[in-house]
Image (tube, rainbow, N blue to C red; front, side):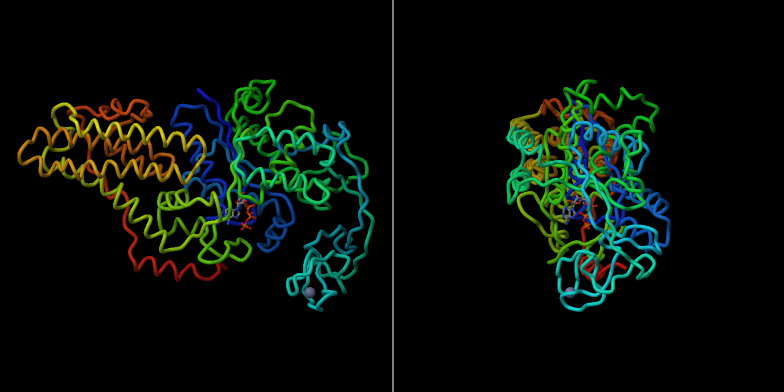
Length: 572
Ligand SMILES: Nc1ncnc2c1ncn2[C@@H]1O[C@H](COP(=O)(O)OP(=O)(O)OP(=O)(O)O)[C@@H](O)[C@H]1O
Ligand SMILES: [Zn+2]
Protein backbone atom coordinates (compact mmCIF):
# COMPACT_ATOMS: atom_id res chain seq x y z
CA UNK A 1 0.00 0.00 0.00
CA UNK A 2 1.44 3.35 -1.09
CA UNK A 3 1.20 6.50 1.03
CA UNK A 4 0.15 9.61 -0.87
CA UNK A 5 0.20 13.15 0.49
CA UNK A 6 -1.89 15.53 -1.62
CA UNK A 7 -2.28 19.29 -1.31
CA UNK A 8 -4.36 21.68 -3.38
CA UNK A 9 -3.34 25.33 -3.81
CA UNK A 10 -4.94 27.28 -0.98
CA UNK A 11 -8.03 29.21 -2.06
CA UNK A 12 -7.74 32.85 -1.07
CA UNK A 13 -10.23 33.97 1.54
CA UNK A 14 -11.63 37.07 -0.19
CA UNK A 15 -14.79 35.48 -1.55
CA UNK A 16 -16.43 32.43 -3.04
CA UNK A 17 -14.29 30.70 -5.67
CA UNK A 18 -15.23 30.41 -9.35
CA UNK A 19 -15.18 27.35 -11.60
CA UNK A 20 -11.69 28.31 -12.83
CA UNK A 21 -10.26 28.14 -9.32
CA UNK A 22 -12.03 24.83 -8.80
CA UNK A 23 -10.60 23.07 -11.86
CA UNK A 24 -7.20 24.74 -11.46
CA UNK A 25 -6.52 23.17 -8.07
CA UNK A 26 -9.05 21.61 -5.69
CA UNK A 27 -11.05 19.42 -8.07
CA UNK A 28 -8.18 17.55 -9.77
CA UNK A 29 -6.58 17.10 -6.35
CA UNK A 30 -9.84 15.54 -5.15
CA UNK A 31 -9.96 13.27 -8.20
CA UNK A 32 -6.48 12.01 -7.44
CA UNK A 33 -7.25 11.56 -3.73
CA UNK A 34 -10.42 9.59 -4.43
CA UNK A 35 -8.67 7.45 -7.03
CA UNK A 36 -5.87 6.55 -4.64
CA UNK A 37 -8.26 5.72 -1.82
CA UNK A 38 -10.18 3.54 -4.30
CA UNK A 39 -6.97 1.66 -5.05
CA UNK A 40 -6.48 1.02 -1.34
CA UNK A 41 -3.63 3.50 -0.83
CA UNK A 42 -3.25 5.52 2.35
CA UNK A 43 -4.08 9.14 1.51
CA UNK A 44 -3.67 12.43 3.36
CA UNK A 45 -5.48 15.16 1.41
CA UNK A 46 -5.01 18.68 2.79
CA UNK A 47 -6.26 22.12 1.87
CA UNK A 48 -6.90 25.37 3.75
CA UNK A 49 -7.94 28.94 3.24
CA UNK A 50 -5.18 31.44 2.52
CA UNK A 51 -6.15 34.28 4.83
CA UNK A 52 -3.45 36.90 5.15
CA UNK A 53 -2.57 39.96 3.08
CA UNK A 54 -4.08 43.20 1.86
CA UNK A 55 -6.96 41.76 -0.23
CA UNK A 56 -8.37 40.06 2.89
CA UNK A 57 -8.21 43.33 4.82
CA UNK A 58 -9.89 45.17 1.94
CA UNK A 59 -12.63 42.55 1.58
CA UNK A 60 -13.29 42.71 5.33
CA UNK A 61 -13.49 46.50 5.20
CA UNK A 62 -15.96 46.27 2.33
CA UNK A 63 -18.07 43.82 4.34
CA UNK A 64 -17.81 46.14 7.34
CA UNK A 65 -16.29 43.45 9.56
CA UNK A 66 -13.09 43.07 11.56
CA UNK A 67 -10.73 41.04 9.38
CA UNK A 68 -10.51 38.12 11.84
CA UNK A 69 -14.32 37.79 11.90
CA UNK A 70 -14.57 38.14 8.15
CA UNK A 71 -12.04 35.34 7.63
CA UNK A 72 -13.69 33.06 10.18
CA UNK A 73 -17.09 33.52 8.50
CA UNK A 74 -15.77 33.11 4.96
CA UNK A 75 -13.84 30.00 5.96
CA UNK A 76 -17.13 28.41 7.07
CA UNK A 77 -18.76 29.41 3.79
CA UNK A 78 -15.91 27.89 1.78
CA UNK A 79 -15.95 24.72 3.90
CA UNK A 80 -19.65 24.24 3.29
CA UNK A 81 -19.36 24.71 -0.48
CA UNK A 82 -16.36 22.39 -0.64
CA UNK A 83 -18.41 19.71 1.10
CA UNK A 84 -21.27 20.17 -1.28
CA UNK A 85 -18.91 19.78 -4.24
CA UNK A 86 -17.71 16.50 -2.76
CA UNK A 87 -14.17 17.76 -2.10
CA UNK A 88 -12.94 15.02 0.19
CA UNK A 89 -10.26 16.82 2.22
CA UNK A 90 -8.96 15.02 5.26
CA UNK A 91 -8.71 18.49 6.70
CA UNK A 92 -9.62 21.95 5.46
CA UNK A 93 -7.57 24.26 7.65
CA UNK A 94 -6.70 27.94 7.93
CA UNK A 95 -3.41 29.70 7.26
CA UNK A 96 -4.26 31.92 10.25
CA UNK A 97 -4.21 28.96 12.65
CA UNK A 98 -2.00 29.03 15.76
CA UNK A 99 -0.21 25.98 14.36
CA UNK A 100 0.78 27.94 11.26
CA UNK A 101 1.85 30.98 13.28
CA UNK A 102 4.21 28.78 15.24
CA UNK A 103 5.60 26.87 12.26
CA UNK A 104 6.10 30.02 10.16
CA UNK A 105 8.06 31.66 12.98
CA UNK A 106 10.03 28.44 13.37
CA UNK A 107 11.04 28.35 9.69
CA UNK A 108 12.03 32.04 9.80
CA UNK A 109 14.31 31.36 12.74
CA UNK A 110 15.96 28.39 11.03
CA UNK A 111 16.49 30.40 7.84
CA UNK A 112 17.99 33.27 9.85
CA UNK A 113 20.34 30.83 11.62
CA UNK A 114 21.43 29.56 8.22
CA UNK A 115 22.25 33.10 7.10
CA UNK A 116 19.49 33.08 4.50
CA UNK A 117 17.60 36.14 5.72
CA UNK A 118 18.81 39.72 5.33
CA UNK A 119 17.41 43.05 6.46
CA UNK A 120 16.84 45.63 3.76
CA UNK A 121 15.96 49.29 4.32
CA UNK A 122 13.01 50.58 2.32
CA UNK A 123 11.04 53.83 2.08
CA UNK A 124 7.29 53.59 2.55
CA UNK A 125 4.29 55.81 3.02
CA UNK A 126 3.28 56.23 6.66
CA UNK A 127 -0.11 57.59 7.70
CA UNK A 128 -0.08 59.61 10.92
CA UNK A 129 -3.86 59.51 11.24
CA UNK A 130 -4.00 55.72 10.85
CA UNK A 131 -0.82 55.15 12.85
CA UNK A 132 0.57 52.67 10.30
CA UNK A 133 2.49 52.17 7.10
CA UNK A 134 0.29 51.95 4.03
CA UNK A 135 0.99 49.14 1.56
CA UNK A 136 0.42 49.85 -2.15
CA UNK A 137 -3.29 49.47 -2.36
CA UNK A 138 -3.94 51.56 0.71
CA UNK A 139 -2.74 54.72 -0.97
CA UNK A 140 -4.66 56.55 -3.69
CA UNK A 141 -3.99 59.81 -5.45
CA UNK A 142 -3.54 61.55 -8.77
CA UNK A 143 -1.61 59.76 -11.49
CA UNK A 144 1.57 61.66 -12.45
CA UNK A 145 1.21 60.26 -15.96
CA UNK A 146 -2.40 60.95 -16.98
CA UNK A 147 -3.86 63.02 -14.16
CA UNK A 148 -6.52 60.42 -13.20
CA UNK A 149 -7.36 61.14 -9.57
CA UNK A 150 -8.24 57.58 -8.45
CA UNK A 151 -4.86 55.98 -9.19
CA UNK A 152 -3.74 53.27 -6.75
CA UNK A 153 -0.34 52.98 -5.14
CA UNK A 154 0.65 50.07 -7.37
CA UNK A 155 -0.93 51.06 -10.68
CA UNK A 156 -3.10 53.62 -12.45
CA UNK A 157 -6.14 51.77 -13.75
CA UNK A 158 -6.83 54.54 -16.24
CA UNK A 159 -3.53 54.59 -18.18
CA UNK A 160 -2.19 51.25 -16.72
CA UNK A 161 1.13 52.82 -15.68
CA UNK A 162 2.89 50.90 -12.91
CA UNK A 163 3.38 53.19 -9.94
CA UNK A 164 5.05 53.39 -6.60
CA UNK A 165 2.95 54.90 -3.78
CA UNK A 166 5.50 57.70 -3.52
CA UNK A 167 4.83 58.68 -7.17
CA UNK A 168 1.24 59.76 -6.50
CA UNK A 169 0.30 63.44 -6.44
CA UNK A 170 -1.90 64.44 -3.47
CA UNK A 171 -1.80 60.97 -1.94
CA UNK A 172 -4.45 59.95 0.58
CA UNK A 173 -5.06 56.94 2.79
CA UNK A 174 -7.84 54.67 1.55
CA UNK A 175 -8.48 53.66 5.16
CA UNK A 176 -9.23 57.06 6.67
CA UNK A 177 -9.04 59.37 3.66
CA UNK A 178 -6.37 61.30 5.56
CA UNK A 179 -3.77 63.26 3.57
CA UNK A 180 -1.46 63.53 6.57
CA UNK A 181 1.07 61.15 5.05
CA UNK A 182 4.84 61.06 5.07
CA UNK A 183 7.57 58.85 3.68
CA UNK A 184 9.46 56.99 6.35
CA UNK A 185 12.34 54.56 6.41
CA UNK A 186 11.33 51.05 7.31
CA UNK A 187 13.19 47.75 7.34
CA UNK A 188 12.10 44.45 5.85
CA UNK A 189 13.36 40.89 5.85
CA UNK A 190 14.38 39.30 2.57
CA UNK A 191 14.78 35.60 1.86
CA UNK A 192 18.08 35.10 0.03
CA UNK A 193 16.69 32.91 -2.72
CA UNK A 194 19.56 33.95 -5.02
CA UNK A 195 21.98 32.14 -2.71
CA UNK A 196 20.04 28.93 -3.28
CA UNK A 197 19.78 29.14 -7.03
CA UNK A 198 22.14 26.27 -7.89
CA UNK A 199 20.62 23.98 -5.30
CA UNK A 200 17.11 24.68 -6.62
CA UNK A 201 18.27 24.28 -10.20
CA UNK A 202 19.70 20.83 -9.51
CA UNK A 203 16.63 19.77 -7.62
CA UNK A 204 14.38 20.79 -10.53
CA UNK A 205 16.65 19.00 -13.01
CA UNK A 206 16.13 15.80 -11.03
CA UNK A 207 12.36 15.98 -11.74
CA UNK A 208 12.26 14.44 -15.20
CA UNK A 209 8.59 13.48 -15.03
CA UNK A 210 7.13 16.91 -14.21
CA UNK A 211 4.81 18.60 -16.72
CA UNK A 212 6.66 20.96 -19.08
CA UNK A 213 4.36 23.75 -17.90
CA UNK A 214 5.79 23.32 -14.40
CA UNK A 215 9.50 23.08 -15.22
CA UNK A 216 9.47 25.79 -17.89
CA UNK A 217 8.00 28.31 -15.45
CA UNK A 218 10.53 27.36 -12.77
CA UNK A 219 13.46 27.57 -15.21
CA UNK A 220 12.33 30.97 -16.46
CA UNK A 221 12.39 32.42 -12.96
CA UNK A 222 15.72 30.78 -12.19
CA UNK A 223 17.55 32.04 -15.26
CA UNK A 224 15.81 34.88 -17.08
CA UNK A 225 17.34 38.34 -16.69
CA UNK A 226 19.40 38.53 -13.53
CA UNK A 227 18.12 35.15 -12.37
CA UNK A 228 16.32 34.28 -9.18
CA UNK A 229 15.81 37.35 -7.00
CA UNK A 230 15.76 37.67 -3.23
CA UNK A 231 12.26 38.13 -1.96
CA UNK A 232 10.76 40.39 0.69
CA UNK A 233 9.01 38.21 3.25
CA UNK A 234 7.64 40.85 5.64
CA UNK A 235 4.99 43.56 5.41
CA UNK A 236 3.73 46.45 7.50
CA UNK A 237 0.27 45.07 8.18
CA UNK A 238 -1.71 44.15 11.29
CA UNK A 239 -3.26 40.99 10.02
CA UNK A 240 -0.83 38.13 9.62
CA UNK A 241 1.81 36.08 11.42
CA UNK A 242 3.85 38.45 13.63
CA UNK A 243 7.54 38.52 12.70
CA UNK A 244 9.37 36.54 15.36
CA UNK A 245 12.43 34.33 15.48
CA UNK A 246 10.81 31.19 16.83
CA UNK A 247 9.39 32.30 20.20
CA UNK A 248 11.74 35.27 20.48
CA UNK A 249 11.18 38.87 19.45
CA UNK A 250 12.97 40.05 16.33
CA UNK A 251 14.53 43.44 17.11
CA UNK A 252 13.59 46.07 14.55
CA UNK A 253 10.64 44.03 13.25
CA UNK A 254 8.08 45.02 15.84
CA UNK A 255 4.58 45.47 14.47
CA UNK A 256 5.37 43.66 11.21
CA UNK A 257 3.97 40.43 9.85
CA UNK A 258 5.29 37.85 7.42
CA UNK A 259 4.24 38.34 3.83
CA UNK A 260 1.34 36.07 2.86
CA UNK A 261 3.47 34.21 0.30
CA UNK A 262 5.87 33.15 3.02
CA UNK A 263 3.28 31.74 5.44
CA UNK A 264 0.73 30.30 2.98
CA UNK A 265 2.69 27.24 1.75
CA UNK A 266 3.91 26.53 5.28
CA UNK A 267 0.22 26.00 6.04
CA UNK A 268 0.36 22.82 3.94
CA UNK A 269 2.44 21.41 6.80
CA UNK A 270 0.65 23.18 9.65
CA UNK A 271 -2.64 21.88 8.26
CA UNK A 272 -1.55 18.32 9.05
CA UNK A 273 -0.87 19.46 12.59
CA UNK A 274 -4.39 20.99 12.70
CA UNK A 275 -5.78 17.69 11.37
CA UNK A 276 -4.03 15.81 14.18
CA UNK A 277 -5.35 18.13 16.88
CA UNK A 278 -8.87 18.14 15.47
CA UNK A 279 -8.93 14.33 15.47
CA UNK A 280 -7.27 13.57 18.79
CA UNK A 281 -4.05 12.35 17.16
CA UNK A 282 -0.48 12.82 18.30
CA UNK A 283 2.36 14.80 16.76
CA UNK A 284 3.85 11.55 15.50
CA UNK A 285 0.65 10.95 13.51
CA UNK A 286 1.07 14.06 11.38
CA UNK A 287 4.86 14.11 11.34
CA UNK A 288 4.93 10.73 9.63
CA UNK A 289 3.52 12.55 6.59
CA UNK A 290 5.96 15.44 6.61
CA UNK A 291 9.24 14.55 8.32
CA UNK A 292 11.51 12.19 6.46
CA UNK A 293 13.26 11.42 9.77
CA UNK A 294 9.90 10.45 11.30
CA UNK A 295 8.41 8.07 8.77
CA UNK A 296 7.69 10.20 5.70
CA UNK A 297 10.45 8.56 3.65
CA UNK A 298 8.02 6.43 1.70
CA UNK A 299 5.44 9.19 1.18
CA UNK A 300 4.77 10.46 -2.34
CA UNK A 301 3.85 14.14 -2.15
CA UNK A 302 1.79 15.65 -4.98
CA UNK A 303 0.72 19.29 -5.32
CA UNK A 304 -2.03 20.70 -7.56
CA UNK A 305 -2.27 24.35 -8.67
CA UNK A 306 -2.88 26.90 -11.44
CA UNK A 307 0.11 28.17 -13.41
CA UNK A 308 0.40 31.49 -11.58
CA UNK A 309 1.23 29.60 -8.37
CA UNK A 310 4.08 27.57 -9.89
CA UNK A 311 7.01 29.90 -9.12
CA UNK A 312 6.18 29.95 -5.43
CA UNK A 313 5.89 26.17 -5.25
CA UNK A 314 8.93 25.30 -7.35
CA UNK A 315 11.24 27.97 -5.90
CA UNK A 316 10.14 29.97 -2.86
CA UNK A 317 8.61 27.19 -0.78
CA UNK A 318 11.41 24.70 -1.60
CA UNK A 319 13.90 27.47 -0.70
CA UNK A 320 12.18 27.72 2.69
CA UNK A 321 12.32 23.96 3.22
CA UNK A 322 15.82 23.31 1.89
CA UNK A 323 17.14 26.44 3.59
CA UNK A 324 15.83 25.34 6.99
CA UNK A 325 18.28 22.43 6.93
CA UNK A 326 15.59 20.25 8.50
CA UNK A 327 14.28 17.00 7.03
CA UNK A 328 10.86 18.17 5.80
CA UNK A 329 9.26 16.47 2.84
CA UNK A 330 9.72 18.20 -0.54
CA UNK A 331 7.16 17.90 -3.31
CA UNK A 332 7.61 14.84 -5.54
CA UNK A 333 5.19 15.75 -8.29
CA UNK A 334 3.72 19.14 -9.12
CA UNK A 335 0.68 19.11 -11.38
CA UNK A 336 -0.08 22.56 -12.77
CA UNK A 337 -2.89 23.85 -14.93
CA UNK A 338 -3.46 26.50 -17.53
CA UNK A 339 -6.51 28.72 -17.21
CA UNK A 340 -10.15 27.99 -17.75
CA UNK A 341 -11.80 31.02 -19.35
CA UNK A 342 -15.46 31.95 -19.30
CA UNK A 343 -17.43 32.55 -22.48
CA UNK A 344 -14.80 34.53 -24.33
CA UNK A 345 -13.23 36.26 -21.33
CA UNK A 346 -11.60 35.59 -17.99
CA UNK A 347 -13.13 34.45 -14.78
CA UNK A 348 -12.60 37.15 -12.19
CA UNK A 349 -13.34 37.17 -8.48
CA UNK A 350 -12.78 40.89 -8.09
CA UNK A 351 -15.01 41.72 -11.09
CA UNK A 352 -17.56 39.01 -10.24
CA UNK A 353 -17.35 37.57 -13.76
CA UNK A 354 -18.21 33.93 -14.50
CA UNK A 355 -19.95 31.19 -12.55
CA UNK A 356 -19.14 30.84 -8.86
CA UNK A 357 -19.26 27.63 -6.88
CA UNK A 358 -22.39 28.50 -4.88
CA UNK A 359 -24.28 29.60 -8.00
CA UNK A 360 -23.27 26.46 -9.88
CA UNK A 361 -24.85 24.28 -7.19
CA UNK A 362 -28.04 26.34 -7.26
CA UNK A 363 -28.70 25.18 -10.80
CA UNK A 364 -27.27 21.66 -11.01
CA UNK A 365 -25.81 18.99 -8.70
CA UNK A 366 -22.05 18.75 -8.22
CA UNK A 367 -21.50 15.72 -10.47
CA UNK A 368 -22.57 17.59 -13.61
CA UNK A 369 -19.95 20.25 -12.94
CA UNK A 370 -17.29 17.79 -11.81
CA UNK A 371 -17.66 15.80 -15.00
CA UNK A 372 -17.52 18.75 -17.36
CA UNK A 373 -14.68 20.51 -15.57
CA UNK A 374 -12.50 17.42 -15.25
CA UNK A 375 -13.13 16.17 -18.77
CA UNK A 376 -12.20 19.64 -20.07
CA UNK A 377 -9.37 20.41 -17.66
CA UNK A 378 -7.01 23.09 -19.04
CA UNK A 379 -3.98 20.84 -19.20
CA UNK A 380 -2.08 21.49 -22.42
CA UNK A 381 -3.52 24.96 -23.01
CA UNK A 382 -6.15 27.32 -21.67
CA UNK A 383 -9.67 26.03 -22.21
CA UNK A 384 -13.03 27.69 -22.27
CA UNK A 385 -16.34 27.12 -20.56
CA UNK A 386 -19.28 27.66 -22.88
CA UNK A 387 -22.87 26.79 -22.05
CA UNK A 388 -23.29 24.97 -25.39
CA UNK A 389 -20.34 22.71 -24.72
CA UNK A 390 -21.48 22.09 -21.14
CA UNK A 391 -24.99 21.12 -22.31
CA UNK A 392 -23.64 18.86 -25.01
CA UNK A 393 -21.17 17.07 -22.78
CA UNK A 394 -23.64 16.51 -19.93
CA UNK A 395 -26.38 15.30 -22.26
CA UNK A 396 -24.17 12.99 -24.27
CA UNK A 397 -21.74 11.55 -21.75
CA UNK A 398 -23.75 11.50 -18.57
CA UNK A 399 -27.37 11.22 -19.70
CA UNK A 400 -27.15 9.30 -23.00
CA UNK A 401 -24.20 7.05 -22.29
CA UNK A 402 -24.02 6.30 -18.57
CA UNK A 403 -27.48 7.25 -17.30
CA UNK A 404 -29.28 5.56 -20.15
CA UNK A 405 -27.30 2.35 -19.73
CA UNK A 406 -28.22 2.08 -16.07
CA UNK A 407 -31.85 2.87 -16.66
CA UNK A 408 -32.29 0.50 -19.62
CA UNK A 409 -30.81 -2.58 -18.04
CA UNK A 410 -32.45 -2.19 -14.63
CA UNK A 411 -35.88 -1.51 -16.12
CA UNK A 412 -35.61 -4.36 -18.59
CA UNK A 413 -34.63 -6.79 -15.84
CA UNK A 414 -37.47 -5.63 -13.63
CA UNK A 415 -40.02 -6.13 -16.40
CA UNK A 416 -38.87 -9.61 -17.46
CA UNK A 417 -37.14 -11.19 -14.46
CA UNK A 418 -38.00 -9.04 -11.44
CA UNK A 419 -35.67 -7.05 -9.20
CA UNK A 420 -32.97 -9.66 -8.61
CA UNK A 421 -30.04 -10.94 -10.69
CA UNK A 422 -31.62 -13.60 -12.90
CA UNK A 423 -30.43 -17.15 -13.29
CA UNK A 424 -28.68 -17.80 -16.60
CA UNK A 425 -25.75 -19.66 -18.07
CA UNK A 426 -22.02 -19.01 -18.17
CA UNK A 427 -20.73 -15.91 -19.93
CA UNK A 428 -20.23 -16.68 -23.65
CA UNK A 429 -17.99 -15.40 -26.40
CA UNK A 430 -19.48 -11.94 -26.56
CA UNK A 431 -19.08 -11.47 -22.81
CA UNK A 432 -15.47 -12.72 -22.91
CA UNK A 433 -14.70 -10.21 -25.67
CA UNK A 434 -16.19 -7.46 -23.53
CA UNK A 435 -14.12 -8.56 -20.52
CA UNK A 436 -10.98 -8.47 -22.66
CA UNK A 437 -11.75 -5.00 -23.96
CA UNK A 438 -12.58 -3.68 -20.50
CA UNK A 439 -9.39 -5.16 -19.08
CA UNK A 440 -7.31 -3.26 -21.62
CA UNK A 441 -9.25 -0.07 -21.04
CA UNK A 442 -9.21 -0.24 -17.26
CA UNK A 443 -5.43 -0.77 -17.23
CA UNK A 444 -5.12 2.29 -19.50
CA UNK A 445 -7.42 4.26 -17.19
CA UNK A 446 -5.20 3.38 -14.22
CA UNK A 447 -2.13 4.49 -16.16
CA UNK A 448 -3.65 7.89 -17.00
CA UNK A 449 -4.85 8.42 -13.45
CA UNK A 450 -1.47 7.59 -12.02
CA UNK A 451 0.16 10.00 -14.48
CA UNK A 452 -2.47 12.63 -13.50
CA UNK A 453 -3.52 12.97 -17.14
CA UNK A 454 -6.97 14.20 -16.30
CA UNK A 455 -8.53 14.56 -19.75
CA UNK A 456 -7.17 11.23 -20.93
CA UNK A 457 -8.57 9.58 -17.79
CA UNK A 458 -11.99 11.06 -18.48
CA UNK A 459 -11.86 9.91 -22.12
CA UNK A 460 -10.95 6.40 -21.08
CA UNK A 461 -13.72 6.27 -18.50
CA UNK A 462 -16.21 7.41 -21.10
CA UNK A 463 -14.93 4.71 -23.48
CA UNK A 464 -15.50 2.17 -20.71
CA UNK A 465 -19.12 3.32 -20.39
CA UNK A 466 -19.51 3.23 -24.18
CA UNK A 467 -18.21 -0.35 -24.31
CA UNK A 468 -21.06 -1.42 -22.03
CA UNK A 469 -23.60 0.38 -24.16
CA UNK A 470 -22.28 -1.23 -27.31
CA UNK A 471 -22.39 -4.63 -25.69
CA UNK A 472 -25.98 -4.09 -24.68
CA UNK A 473 -26.85 -2.81 -28.12
CA UNK A 474 -25.45 -5.85 -29.89
CA UNK A 475 -26.42 -8.46 -27.28
CA UNK A 476 -29.93 -6.94 -27.31
CA UNK A 477 -31.44 -8.99 -24.46
CA UNK A 478 -34.90 -7.64 -25.40
CA UNK A 479 -34.64 -9.58 -28.71
CA UNK A 480 -32.73 -12.54 -27.27
CA UNK A 481 -35.46 -12.93 -24.67
CA UNK A 482 -37.99 -13.98 -27.31
CA UNK A 483 -35.99 -16.98 -28.52
CA UNK A 484 -33.60 -17.74 -25.63
CA UNK A 485 -34.67 -16.35 -22.21
CA UNK A 486 -31.75 -18.05 -20.46
CA UNK A 487 -29.22 -16.29 -22.67
CA UNK A 488 -31.07 -13.02 -22.11
CA UNK A 489 -30.76 -13.61 -18.36
CA UNK A 490 -26.98 -14.04 -18.74
CA UNK A 491 -26.80 -10.79 -20.68
CA UNK A 492 -28.81 -9.02 -18.01
CA UNK A 493 -26.54 -10.41 -15.29
CA UNK A 494 -23.59 -8.93 -17.18
CA UNK A 495 -25.38 -5.58 -17.51
CA UNK A 496 -26.20 -5.34 -13.80
CA UNK A 497 -22.64 -6.25 -12.86
CA UNK A 498 -21.41 -3.56 -15.21
CA UNK A 499 -23.37 -1.02 -13.18
CA UNK A 500 -21.44 -1.94 -10.05
CA UNK A 501 -18.18 -1.88 -11.98
CA UNK A 502 -18.99 1.57 -13.39
CA UNK A 503 -19.85 2.84 -9.94
CA UNK A 504 -16.42 1.84 -8.63
CA UNK A 505 -14.47 3.20 -11.60
CA UNK A 506 -16.44 6.46 -11.81
CA UNK A 507 -16.26 7.37 -8.11
CA UNK A 508 -13.33 9.80 -8.47
CA UNK A 509 -15.26 11.81 -11.08
CA UNK A 510 -18.91 11.57 -10.03
CA UNK A 511 -19.12 10.39 -6.42
CA UNK A 512 -22.83 11.13 -5.96
CA UNK A 513 -23.87 9.08 -8.99
CA UNK A 514 -21.57 6.32 -7.76
CA UNK A 515 -23.40 6.28 -4.44
CA UNK A 516 -26.78 6.05 -6.22
CA UNK A 517 -25.60 3.19 -8.42
CA UNK A 518 -24.20 1.25 -5.48
CA UNK A 519 -27.32 1.81 -3.47
CA UNK A 520 -29.53 0.69 -6.37
CA UNK A 521 -27.37 -2.42 -6.72
CA UNK A 522 -27.67 -2.82 -2.94
CA UNK A 523 -23.98 -3.52 -2.50
CA UNK A 524 -21.12 -2.23 -0.38
CA UNK A 525 -18.60 -4.02 -2.55
CA UNK A 526 -16.37 -1.25 -3.92
CA UNK A 527 -13.29 -3.37 -4.50
CA UNK A 528 -11.14 -2.27 -7.43
CA UNK A 529 -11.40 -4.49 -10.56
CA UNK A 530 -7.87 -5.88 -10.60
CA UNK A 531 -9.46 -8.94 -12.19
CA UNK A 532 -12.24 -7.76 -14.47
CA UNK A 533 -13.81 -11.20 -15.00
CA UNK A 534 -14.10 -11.61 -11.26
CA UNK A 535 -15.48 -8.09 -10.85
CA UNK A 536 -18.21 -8.89 -13.38
CA UNK A 537 -19.34 -11.82 -11.27
CA UNK A 538 -19.50 -9.88 -8.02
CA UNK A 539 -23.30 -9.65 -8.01
CA UNK A 540 -24.57 -13.23 -8.00
CA UNK A 541 -27.79 -14.88 -9.02
CA UNK A 542 -30.63 -13.93 -6.69
CA UNK A 543 -28.96 -10.71 -5.42
CA UNK A 544 -31.67 -8.07 -5.18
CA UNK A 545 -31.49 -4.58 -6.61
CA UNK A 546 -33.81 -1.68 -7.32
CA UNK A 547 -34.30 0.60 -10.29
CA UNK A 548 -32.66 3.94 -9.42
CA UNK A 549 -34.11 7.38 -10.01
CA UNK A 550 -32.92 9.05 -13.20
CA UNK A 551 -29.17 9.50 -12.65
CA UNK A 552 -28.70 12.52 -14.92
CA UNK A 553 -31.40 14.76 -16.35
CA UNK A 554 -30.71 16.32 -19.73
CA UNK A 555 -30.14 20.05 -19.95
CA UNK A 556 -32.83 21.57 -22.18
CA UNK A 557 -32.25 24.40 -24.64
CA UNK A 558 -34.51 26.64 -22.53
CA UNK A 559 -32.45 26.02 -19.44
CA UNK A 560 -29.23 26.66 -21.30
CA UNK A 561 -30.51 29.97 -22.64
CA UNK A 562 -31.79 31.03 -19.25
CA UNK A 563 -28.43 30.32 -17.58
CA UNK A 564 -26.51 31.93 -20.40
CA UNK A 565 -28.55 35.06 -19.79
CA UNK A 566 -28.32 34.91 -16.02
CA UNK A 567 -24.54 34.53 -15.95
CA UNK A 568 -23.69 36.96 -18.74
CA UNK A 569 -23.11 39.97 -16.50
CA UNK A 570 -21.25 40.38 -13.26
CA UNK A 571 -22.23 39.31 -9.79
CA UNK A 572 -22.79 42.10 -7.28
N1 LIG B 1 -9.23 30.81 -14.48
C1 LIG B 1 -8.52 29.92 -13.80
N2 LIG B 1 -8.35 28.66 -14.29
C2 LIG B 1 -7.65 27.74 -13.62
N3 LIG B 1 -7.09 27.95 -12.40
C3 LIG B 1 -7.21 29.17 -11.85
C4 LIG B 1 -7.93 30.22 -12.51
N4 LIG B 1 -7.88 31.32 -11.72
C5 LIG B 1 -7.17 30.98 -10.61
N5 LIG B 1 -6.77 29.69 -10.67
C6 LIG B 1 -6.07 28.91 -9.65
O1 LIG B 1 -6.97 28.76 -8.56
C7 LIG B 1 -6.25 28.51 -7.37
C8 LIG B 1 -6.80 29.33 -6.23
O2 LIG B 1 -6.50 30.65 -6.51
P1 LIG B 1 -6.87 31.92 -5.62
O3 LIG B 1 -7.94 31.60 -4.66
O4 LIG B 1 -5.62 32.52 -5.13
O5 LIG B 1 -7.51 32.86 -6.74
P2 LIG B 1 -6.77 33.83 -7.72
O6 LIG B 1 -5.56 33.19 -8.31
O7 LIG B 1 -6.59 35.09 -6.96
O8 LIG B 1 -7.81 34.00 -8.91
P3 LIG B 1 -9.10 34.95 -8.97
O9 LIG B 1 -8.72 36.32 -8.52
O10 LIG B 1 -9.53 34.89 -10.41
O11 LIG B 1 -10.09 34.28 -8.08
C9 LIG B 1 -4.79 28.83 -7.72
O12 LIG B 1 -4.08 27.62 -7.87
C10 LIG B 1 -4.86 29.57 -9.04
O13 LIG B 1 -3.71 29.33 -9.80
ZN1 LIG C 1 -2.70 57.31 -15.18
